[in-house]
Amino acid sequence: MTDSATTPEPAAQHNIDTSVPHSARIWNYWLGGQDNYPVDKEAGDAYTAVFPGIVTIARSSRAFLRRNITYLVAEAGIRQFLDVGTGLPTADNTHEVAQRIAPESRIVYVDNDPMVLAHARTLLRSTPEGATAYVDADALDPDRVLAAAAGTLDLTRPTALILSNILGHVADHDQARSLVTRLMDALPSGSHLSINDGSRGIDPVFERAQDAYNESGAVPYILRTVDQITAYFDGLDLIAPGVVPVPFWRPDTTSPAPEPIGEHGGLARKP
Image (cartoon, rainbow, N blue to C red; front, side, top):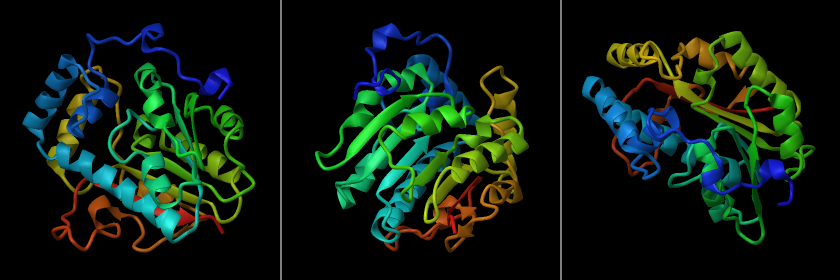
């Protein structure tokens, strides 16, 4: 990796403000990760005091992504992944799940968070047969994302686009849909789209907690209706069971019976 856009630099070179809570670090805390600071734990604990179920949502989201990737590699034959808005490394990152099944898998991670960049080396521990890369880019700049990703991925071959809990950070739903469309338009037939995001209409306590968080001055995350999340897949062929609460998407048979939560997701194939 010689492209400066995909080469992580030492953490000390980045301006990471440890005095203000950060959504990616709070999410990492809820997932049980270590890449967070006391201020993030305080904010995370304040949120869980209002809505303890957020920890279940965070961990169910990660489990949904793991099952998605397993399906994509083992059943759909996908060997290329573009993970946009990847967040901080935790257990079962995209490349770890994919390369356990198919070591030749190639993965590009995209984020523009200095904290994620500082820890990107964890995301670059590829198998010898495959490849991983990290692109320091804004998800709202799809042309930049695609141009940088093309340095590692062959975008003429089927590719899985992963958008996990990122579209809620795009305030305008039409803009979020346009972003998805632009990225998918650049990928060939046989590519797949995986999306999961916080949703409205399931848990009013969650909705009140998130609305209060958004009004606190933190970077907002917009919960969307199930219809709005489903609209991201327009023009694609949804894989059964469609857009559902994430614990219901092809649950592990050894797990307890799933219960609905305010996090919906789906997976679809481009015809």
